[in-house]
Length: 82
View (tube, helix red, strand yellow):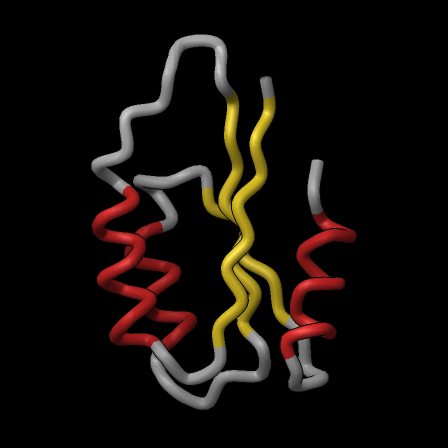
């Protein structure tokens, strides 16, 4: 089974950091493959630095969507799902 998780964020680097830290403790069942897509929705905070810190510990795919808005960000995530 394959699971894709999408997080769309705009200037919430502190909350994103906490979320990604907690996600490192997930227990993934055998036979499950997952990917974590994080869409930077034109952030002006430390989002990219947070993503870089967690990139080696999660199956993280970093995306950037310059058009602000949740729909644009979600559409970017959907188009990138494996």
